[in-house]
Image 1 (cartoon, rainbow, N blue to C red):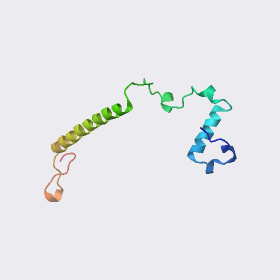
Image 2 (cartoon, one colour):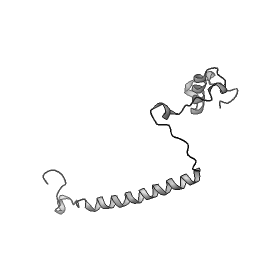
Image 3 (cartoon, rainbow, N blue to C red):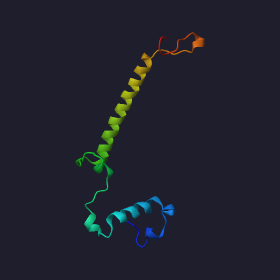
Image 4 (cartoon, rainbow, N blue to C red):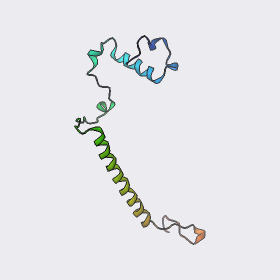
Length: 107
């Protein structure tokens, strides 16, 4: 919430911190409404740029974090294997002075 007694209207934008600027914008958006009147307003950008609403899941945070971290580690391991396979299948590039050919057209 906005700090009581501190109004950003007496300051210029140049010397306002980020938090103060954000609260100034929020105060401008809500005008003179009481908090109870705008508690249903959501200022999440995803709602306005086409992101689909997601249902809250019942999975506890710690369990979800462990599961997602394990999935990430598996994907990273797979990525390393794929990177190695790609590197193994790329032609060895030697400089022209070492008798190698340049990669590219007509080589």
